[in-house]
Length: 412
Ligand SMILES: [Zn+2]
Image: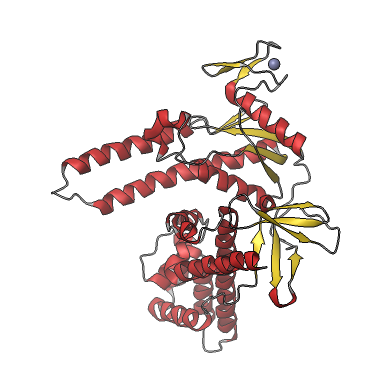
């Protein structure tokens, strides 16, 4: 129980940190689609300080984000109700305020007193609605109502935590749960024989020395009846993703990465030459951020295309080696700083979860040398994999993806 309570306590701390940092008005623009927050939380170092396994850390972040988003929807609904009930407001005024609540750009800019930037069509609508009303008065009204309705979020009881599929395993009439110590799992006997393969919530009852496994019913999750394929994938630094059938996604990924890393190199050398002159870092951060966002939106677009095209029911993905390790990555170390594999993996996991696709991580040792057709050891010549035992020749990455799929299917 103590080991589980440790996780619950850290889980609560992570959630509170996210509430505190992103629950307010200033972070509104970061909530959708949420990569920025995920990245910033990664960089915050909180996970390392707590020594909380990432399998729990990111769930706590997502959990808190979900709470923040629903808190905002509730706030907007409450303000909307006040408007509808307000008899002193004219219909034109109500239209305008409803528009502000509905269009997130407009809502953000009103709350933050920042200049309004809208796409052409929306701007036209805005101008039309704004022409007949006192914009300043109504914006103040919206701000006041939001201040009144928008409560602060805070988690004050550490009574449980969400747990991802890869952090638990059913066996021996019970469940094995990962704890904070590396590679350790604790065993909890269960009173029923239910077996789930999805994210669960572990609710703790320390006084009774008991726990309850709650199965969240997520209505927002999409389910595609026709997504049934089993797909093994291999992730790369040039080609982002290759399937076991040899289909490729993210052809431009290498080029995007190179552009970013070259630019960073160049800026670094300029910076180190002019240290005394102290050239503006703000500009640097802004440009870097922009290049990263471009790369990320490309990654997301290609991952979406992958899921749409392959229609997988299960995705098998190799377990990634620890970052910073020696080995083949060293050769391309100048790129390592911008190598986005953690990002790709997180995004793929999230997208699969949202669409009810199972994602299985597979032990990856020797995956690139083994022949995916006969299992013998083969050779790589450039991008080609050749098996002298059975004569199989294929793309190196497709072969690795084939092994990933094979190992995954044998495991489950
Ligand atoms: Zn072979």
